[in-house]
Structures are given as structure tokens and as C-alpha cells.
Image (cartoon, rainbow over all chains, first blue to last red; front, side, top):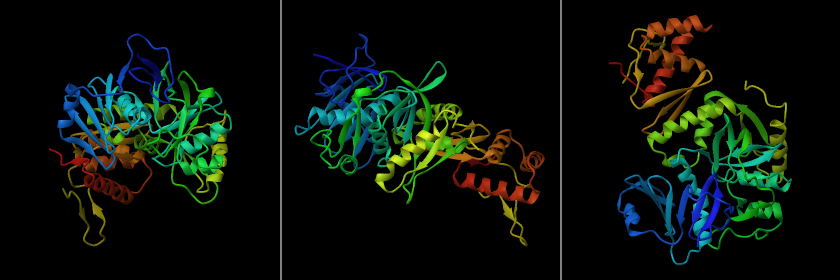
Length: 313
Length: 105
């Protein structure tokens, strides 16, 4: 039995359900085949090579163009050299939902980069029919801000991983999957209790907000990019960035940037510079008071409103 | 790679007489409007240059001598020669410190 999904613009055929992914009709020859239950011995040999990246969370190995990801909990992924097949295996205590949580986050973000797609570490919301990206470092508040927009009725394009493609000469935000991943304290602050929303899976502390009701199926023009900076006392503040400062912010907030090889970095700079020329970029300083996230939404909405965008500086 | 010297009386950096460095192999430059981003792609290090810094990098890439670079900048920007030398010296020191330039052949 196979399961078919559309995630980040990739058509995916899997041998098991991918919890949270959007079911889709896909072509007979999908972009990506995912095997959720095991890694064949021929592919697992990649783990015999020395790591190219190693921290307390993940070890990454590279052999003959194939990448291996080995997470601290024992979950492993192998991505083939063409980034067209993923094999995964998990410890006995893990569930398919646990594996899907890795897959829909860093693993597919890496696959996008291997396939040459610029991808930002960002959520994206729909304002006035166009996408507005909200980028930030981990824990920087992008999902919280997106949840505040969702609570106002805005559609969510993606959470955490934002692929950007050019359609008819226009940069567009590609939908991810219809969930927002939220920390328990954010859930408690917004929805009254930290268990007000379901867990991503039993093995994770994050919970999710289902945003499938008005989830877009197609890429949307990218109207603006907002990079969240350090939280400040008092009301949120937003300012336009341009030139090299804007480009550096995008580079700093691109997905899986730590793992890019030199060729990928050069490609990324080309794409980032093209993006900066077309899409206005803002820095925003959220309030350290979570209750004021609505003011940040107001500021972002006003900044990207029709007629509000002008040349930087 | 120390390529500048200081005036013994004023401490001012004197750079006009020395040979300009060139971009280190493995560093690429990308114009963003009138500014620039440098990428040291082996080390994954990025560095932003303002319009004047971008212009200096362009002139270095053309192989211009430092004296000629200073002359051209003086023609293009309304700034005193002293301020220009100081700014260019500071930029070159920064580029050297980040190993984005190397001694010219």
C-alpha cells in the first residue's frame, strides 16, 4: 500500500502514513519516494563514514553523494544522491508520528536544499491574498506569530520551512503542511492550557494547531519577508532593511544553512540576491510580553498593506 | 599580512604607498543594489559591504593600486582625503582579519 502527499511543492509517495502531511493526487513518477520503516543495508553503509556535521542533536554523514542523518534518539534517515529517495528507521519506542516529525521538518528542508530550492527558516501567512514570510531563529517566535494570524482567520502557508520558487518571474511561497508546531507555553498563553492542543507525537513536547480548514494548495506570490529579532520591552517595532543587510538576514535565516556545501552556498547567494531585489524585507522586534503578539500582527499587516510598501531608505 | 603602516607622529594609517591586496581564492562577491555581499564559500562566512566598501572591492578586483583607488573614490564621493584613507585602511584591515583578501601577486 502506498500513500501520496504534496508537501513543500514535492510530490511524495510513501510506504506508510506521514502524520500531518497533506494528502494529494500526485503524478505516477513522484519527486520523492519515502520508506518509513527501514533502511536497506546497501543504503545504511553511509553511516560507516566520518561525520560532516555533529552536535548533540544530530550527526550527518556523507558518502558518494548520499547523506545520512542520525538523531540522538536513534532515528536515522538516508537521503540518496539525487534527493529523490529517503529511507528511515526508528528505535522500537518511536512511532511513525515521531518519524514524520523529523521528516516534515529538517529532513525535507534538507531535501529541498539538495534539490536546489531556496528555503527559508520561516513560517508564512496569507495577507490580502499574498504570502508574508515570518522568519526567525529557532525559538524566535515565528510559529507563535503565525498562530496569532491564524486565530484572526488568516490562512497559513507553512510553518518553519518555507520553500521559495519563481513562477512567471515572480517569487512565490510554496505551501508546506497544514499544522503549526507550538511550544507548550505558547499553547498555554494563547489557548488557556498547555494541553489545549494535541501533541505532535508522544515523543515530542511540542503541540500543533490544525490549520487545514483554509490551507492553500498552490504557491502564492511572496509579498514581504519579516525577520523577527530579539524580543524587546514595550510594544513591537518594525523597520525596513535593504541592500547587503537584507541579504545577510536571508542567508542567516535560510533552512539547514549549517549543512550547505560550498556549491550550495554559491547557489544560495545567487537566489538570495535575486529575492532581495524583488521582495521587501523587514526586521521586527516582538514584545517580550506574549500577550502583545496581536500588536505585532497589526504592525506586520499595516506594513505590507497595499500602498504601504515603498523603496528602502 | 600587515600591509599598512602608521604615521609616527599622528598615528594616521598611511596606505597609499602599499600594493593593494586582491580577493582571496574562494571568495565571491555579489552586488545587491549598490551594496555587496562577500561569500567565503569554503568556510561558509558572509560579509556585507556598504556602497563605498563595495566600490573598493570592485576596484581591488580590477587590480587597481591603492593610490589609484583613493583617487577614484575621491572623485566619486564628497569626503576628505584623510577620512577616505582612514576608512579604506579600516576596511582593508577588516578584510585581512577575516581573510577575505590576500597579498597581490
